[in-house]
Image 1 (spheres, helix red, strand yellow):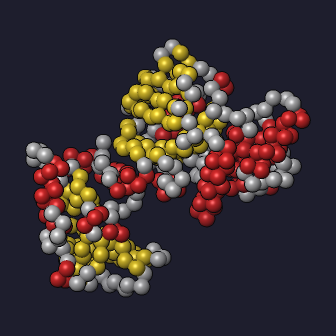
Image 2 (cartoon, helix red, strand yellow):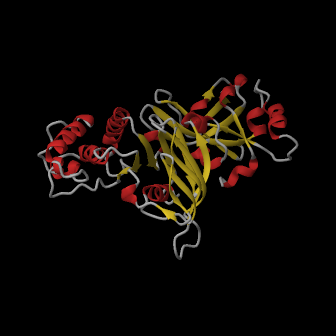
Image 3 (cartoon, helix red, strand yellow):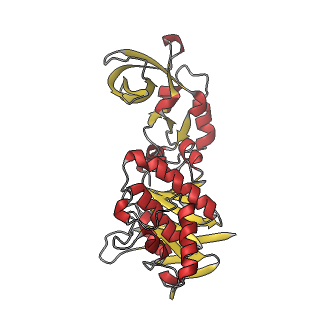
Amino acid sequence: MTMLCLKNLGKRYARADTPSLTGFDLTVERGELVGIVGESGSGKTTILRLVAGFEEPTTGSIAVDGQVVSSGNNFVAAEARGIGMVFQDYALFPHLRIGENIAFGLKANKGSNRSVVAEMLELVDLQGSENYYPHELSGGQQQRIALARALAPRPKLMLLDEPFSNLDEASKTRVRDDMYRAIQRARITALWVSHDITQIMSVVKHVTLIKSGRLQQAGEPEQLYREPCNRYVAGFFGKVNILPVHLVNQGLDHPIAEATAGEMGASREIPEVVIRPDHIDLVEEAEASIVGVVKHTFFQGEKREVVVCAGEHEITVNVGRERIVSVGERLCLRPKCSELRLMRAESHSGG
């Protein structure tokens, strides 16, 4: 059953030159955890604010659990939508103890409230912390308390707005896993917004990528990673090589040129090949389809990122840290045929 349905959603703020959101559609089924990702200013937080009822859309409609909460002149106030939200900055009351923070949005029934507070603290694995003040907890613990407070009123839908933005890198993965487990245990539908796809793609089943207020691609994270529809989507998952077909077709057993004709149809576009640095092997010259000279090397812990000049093109390849590579060294490369993807030339703009 559908929990959230957005149709042709748009938002233009007063005095803004361009819309913050244009023609956005999204359906979230009950119990799903869905991610919305995009760079800063892409419109993802605008979507959350519209769903929460903090803003009114310029166009389109919003339905929560089968009830239309925003469409034309019909607008249901935020407090009547049954939606919980976790903000970037925790938004905990510093003068209230943890138990009081969690119970803040509950009805005034001390006995039942104590029970709910205890249940929520157990849900986020912070039992016994109800008498602490927020400043006595770590940033990760405060974020879990913010989640507990949002879950306490039993919302229909949970919105998570960049919940890790105030955490250090070492804490992000741990807190992400803790929050994911709590959301799963609560069996709640959630919409998770982030600019960092690597932090959420391991926990969400479906992800929507937006740029400048427009949908770029939606699907399972692995689908977007392996089958990007344009340069923006391809690059959002990290370094990527986008090369002309003729460069990688030389000497390969994989008939890219023939596939080009089939996939591009009668179009005269000159397609390109997408290949990620992890999917290019260093080989002997007899097996190589690309030969180039090392321009830069960057040590990155377990791997080295190597930039190779092959004619007028630069190709990035990752090699193990045990492989010492020097600037000026001649390298022979061979892309993994199974990882090659064709992309239309018209996708350069990413729009």
